[in-house]
Length: 88
Image 1 (spheres, rainbow, N blue to C red):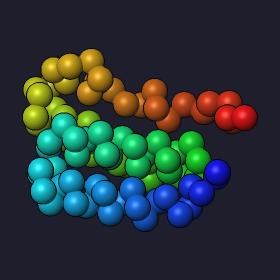
Image 2: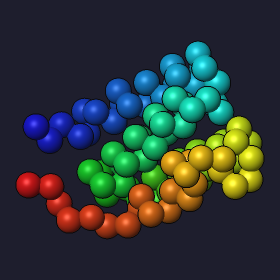
Image 3: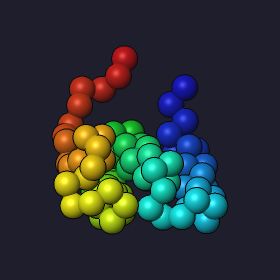
């Protein structure tokens, strides 16, 4: 449908509620941070802001899981910022 701009405030609200309810280092909060960053990067072309959010998620994951990230999916998120071909 392409309603990415309309989705942004909803993603931010979900992240705020998740952070308030579960805390900033909870796994589900980190997933919401990654989803928001993906929306900003790939659909709204705001890669710098997405990078800052991913850096915060990585820092929180390291606090939660240890310096090595504990689990592979919370490793280095920089690959998420690489350009991808547009969806059709």
